[in-house]
Length: 99
Picture 1 (cartoon, rainbow, N blue to C red):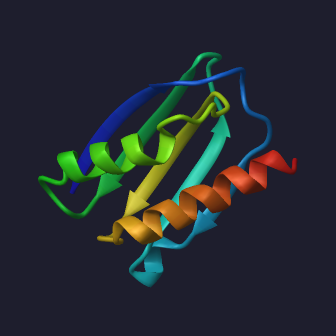
Picture 2 (cartoon, rainbow, N blue to C red):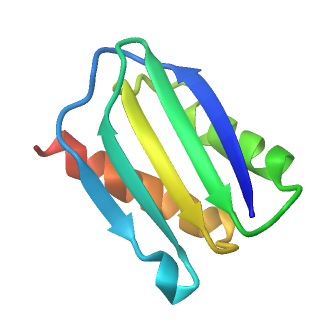
Protein backbone atom coordinates (compact mmCIF):
# COMPACT_ATOMS: atom_id res chain seq x y z
CA UNK A 1 0.00 0.00 0.00
CA UNK A 2 1.19 3.47 -0.84
CA UNK A 3 -0.16 6.87 0.21
CA UNK A 4 0.26 9.79 -2.20
CA UNK A 5 -0.63 13.45 -1.66
CA UNK A 6 -1.30 16.14 -4.24
CA UNK A 7 -2.30 19.79 -4.14
CA UNK A 8 -3.77 21.98 -6.88
CA UNK A 9 -5.06 25.57 -6.98
CA UNK A 10 -8.79 26.00 -6.45
CA UNK A 11 -11.50 28.62 -6.01
CA UNK A 12 -13.59 29.16 -2.88
CA UNK A 13 -14.54 26.33 -0.52
CA UNK A 14 -16.79 23.64 -1.90
CA UNK A 15 -20.13 22.75 -0.37
CA UNK A 16 -21.41 19.42 0.74
CA UNK A 17 -19.87 16.00 1.00
CA UNK A 18 -20.17 12.93 -1.16
CA UNK A 19 -18.92 9.38 -1.41
CA UNK A 20 -18.85 7.65 -4.80
CA UNK A 21 -17.61 4.21 -5.75
CA UNK A 22 -16.88 1.20 -3.58
CA UNK A 23 -13.36 -0.07 -2.95
CA UNK A 24 -14.54 -3.55 -1.93
CA UNK A 25 -15.71 -4.17 -5.49
CA UNK A 26 -12.12 -4.08 -6.78
CA UNK A 27 -12.72 -0.53 -7.95
CA UNK A 28 -12.10 2.61 -5.93
CA UNK A 29 -13.97 4.98 -3.71
CA UNK A 30 -13.77 8.76 -3.65
CA UNK A 31 -14.76 10.90 -0.66
CA UNK A 32 -15.08 14.64 -1.35
CA UNK A 33 -15.60 17.20 1.42
CA UNK A 34 -15.16 20.98 1.80
CA UNK A 35 -11.56 22.13 1.99
CA UNK A 36 -9.39 25.19 2.51
CA UNK A 37 -10.03 28.18 0.22
CA UNK A 38 -7.64 28.28 -2.72
CA UNK A 39 -6.52 24.65 -2.43
CA UNK A 40 -7.67 21.31 -3.77
CA UNK A 41 -6.01 18.65 -1.60
CA UNK A 42 -5.93 15.00 -2.64
CA UNK A 43 -4.80 11.94 -0.72
CA UNK A 44 -4.61 8.63 -2.59
CA UNK A 45 -4.22 5.33 -0.79
CA UNK A 46 -3.44 2.76 -3.48
CA UNK A 47 -2.56 -0.91 -3.67
CA UNK A 48 -0.37 -0.17 -6.71
CA UNK A 49 3.10 0.86 -5.53
CA UNK A 50 5.14 3.14 -7.81
CA UNK A 51 2.13 4.72 -9.52
CA UNK A 52 3.00 8.34 -8.62
CA UNK A 53 3.55 9.45 -12.23
CA UNK A 54 0.27 7.91 -13.43
CA UNK A 55 -1.73 9.72 -10.73
CA UNK A 56 0.08 13.02 -11.37
CA UNK A 57 -0.65 12.87 -15.11
CA UNK A 58 -4.26 11.87 -14.55
CA UNK A 59 -4.94 14.80 -12.19
CA UNK A 60 -3.13 17.29 -14.42
CA UNK A 61 -5.24 16.26 -17.44
CA UNK A 62 -8.46 16.25 -15.43
CA UNK A 63 -7.97 19.64 -13.75
CA UNK A 64 -6.22 21.54 -16.57
CA UNK A 65 -8.14 24.67 -17.55
CA UNK A 66 -10.87 24.11 -14.96
CA UNK A 67 -11.76 26.18 -11.92
CA UNK A 68 -12.64 23.72 -9.21
CA UNK A 69 -13.98 24.28 -5.70
CA UNK A 70 -11.63 24.05 -2.74
CA UNK A 71 -12.19 20.51 -1.52
CA UNK A 72 -10.39 17.68 0.19
CA UNK A 73 -10.49 14.43 -1.80
CA UNK A 74 -9.67 11.04 -0.30
CA UNK A 75 -9.26 8.22 -2.80
CA UNK A 76 -8.99 4.56 -1.83
CA UNK A 77 -7.78 2.68 -4.88
CA UNK A 78 -7.62 -1.02 -5.58
CA UNK A 79 -5.94 -0.77 -8.98
CA UNK A 80 -8.69 1.07 -10.88
CA UNK A 81 -7.97 2.17 -14.43
CA UNK A 82 -7.52 5.90 -15.19
CA UNK A 83 -10.90 5.92 -16.93
CA UNK A 84 -12.66 4.67 -13.80
CA UNK A 85 -10.81 7.20 -11.65
CA UNK A 86 -11.92 10.03 -13.93
CA UNK A 87 -15.51 8.76 -13.93
CA UNK A 88 -15.64 8.61 -10.12
CA UNK A 89 -14.12 12.09 -9.73
CA UNK A 90 -16.56 13.56 -12.25
CA UNK A 91 -19.44 11.85 -10.41
CA UNK A 92 -18.22 13.32 -7.12
CA UNK A 93 -17.90 16.85 -8.48
CA UNK A 94 -21.38 16.59 -10.01
CA UNK A 95 -22.81 15.46 -6.66
CA UNK A 96 -21.38 18.39 -4.70
CA UNK A 97 -22.41 20.85 -7.41
CA UNK A 98 -26.05 19.99 -6.71
CA UNK A 99 -25.89 20.28 -2.89
